[in-house]
Length: 90
Image (cartoon, rainbow, N blue to C red):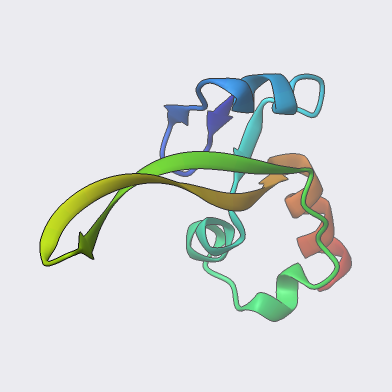
């Protein structure tokens, strides 16, 4: 399972979520940039999974900077579904 816009592999539990849904995925914004589209050409595209990435966030608590791990959720779309959606919206 890879992100076809960055050529990076998905890791952790995200692999389990993507199992059987396809081989190449990306986020909505990455699809717009990759295919050089406006959002209208992707109207009707359905995400196939909601993935999570853990980010380190700096917060100020009692006047001190602390690092805290926070989840960041994002939707991904399968490449073939995006291509079909683009063709049907032309």
